[in-house]
Image 1 (tube, helix red, strand yellow):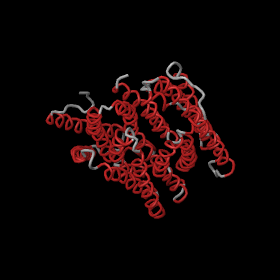
Image 2 (cartoon, one colour; image 1 turned 60 degrees about the vertical axis):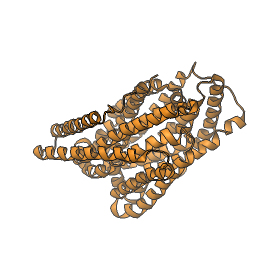
Image 3 (tube, helix red, strand yellow; image 1 turned 120 degrees about the horizontal axis):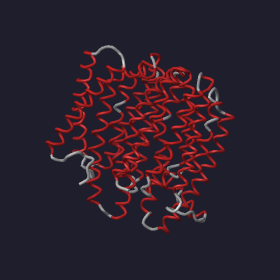
Length: 472
């Protein structure tokens, strides 16, 4: 399947998966309030942390390893079998620890956490890493979309008050499990399971564990911030931060989707020694991703104060204040993602990935611990900004002599200027239409799209490079 189609399917699926909780958020916010959102956020976040442990570093290691082995069926089958046996071992042990957490540690969120158990069970049969390594993004997108639509519908049908929150957790965890089981059926004919020795199974453990260090570090400043806000500043502040972060996380799905597709492609090209093609792909990807994230970051800053109370309800107006600065993490995430997925991981230079995200995690913990007690959820926003900035800075320290960073930073500067102009235009339109309603918000959004889009087309035409997504 072509890169464009893979990107389209993966972007569509990632955004759909992230968008469904956003779509249900206005209803839930009004039905269960800040406290309910805060309690659920705590249970869900801890569940995600256990799932990350259960999957170890397979999201990156599995895709890369399968992509490099897919041209040799014998090697592919043995590689798949070894990785899956390791996955069963790690995920099985993690599931036991999850039950320990639910029954011995969990507090007010215990009942919700119990109904999230299938999230950990689903780790036993998650084969996204194999399908993506084989360039099979369509099955993952289509099958998971159907089951998650059913889960979203159940939210509106069954949840009527805060006591029904367990249904929300049960619906999403069941959808995840069914989606994984349905994707497993797609592997038939593409790869075969062959029982391999324990030695061959455990050889995948060390490289996976190395990548897991980085996964754990990312989780510290992507998920632990909510745990810290909940425990330090309270469930109301966590509810406000949860909704603000949810919108930004949804937008970051575009970046992750492109990165996953390109990692599989570049890993395969790396195995074939196609150095020049890799360099062209990196340059075009950086141009495209920086263009996208700059539009998102400045766009969010322009409309967040109006969007939050309209979308989540008046009780969550402060979420808009949090969203405005939090949106600028998208620029750092996008920049770092291109380097990680197309340089660091395909070249198996995992130590750079580990050191960059560990640096970010340390910064995040220090800033969060210092600011959340005094600033509440805004302290977590500042901590996240500082952490996300640390990641590309550490990458630069290691790769400054190998990559054309001057050109890459030039892309950031150009699109940031365009984003700034768009932000000013959108805010001016907002002054012309001061009433807070969906029509005026729509006018502001369309204005931003037209202004930014027009500037991009002029810039691409003047540079003679054309639209970054186009293959050459």
